[in-house]
Length: 331
Image (cartoon, rainbow, N blue to C red; front, top):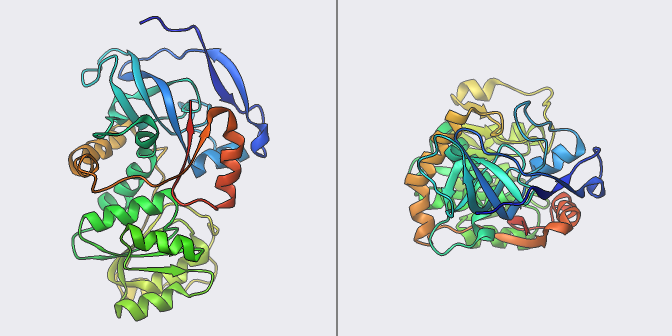
């Protein structure tokens, strides 16, 4: 297969508003050991992309400085040691940066073939959210059948994924969202009750609905919700924090309920995890989740598909939080 010497990518010459991003041209990356070179067909837009553009989420030293953490497309070259994939395979995956480009390096241990019937847009809506939710809600918080779960930001890409996954594995799900439309979307995806955080106190609703609280909370708000999250957990419950949209510093917090209820508080970020850790998440997804996607029991919720050239508009939409589900770019 003849490949071009140059490719287009979204350059970030300075930090700032969405309009600082621009299309530039540079050399094709060369796959190293254990890597795939993928011709990008679709890209997922995520909040870490926005934070990196703003200068608050620098990439790890060994990662591509180009934006983008998930993509899908066709394998066009493979590095040494790759045995599970071949040129011509359609794959999606969790990148170490570099997805906002016509060609992208993808570690083979973070790659997955398209689920049955999926195109590139639908497949590229999977990796970041499914890796994140599986690692935090299942591997770390240990979700099991019959437990009760509260998902904050239920209408986000993470939220719509978490609701579906928790329901698929037998949990009772509650969710928060910021409008009636978003709450209705959460219920449609499987939430027993969706709570409009602008008009209701979620801690009061959870107490009224469950009596004793929920077993797991998947939280992307942080400090602003901390005390109410603790109040909403049942004995031996787990608070899993994945972002700090409501601040990272909680002041004058009463720690006593954590001891009395034997609570566990966890937190993690996906990007700094080792290749081995990401491969372990990928392997779990392949065995536990991909069959459900193949069967149509789970599906990504996609709000908007924008052209590659309209990346600034996609970031503006992300910043408004006016979307339900994923925002995608298509090449």
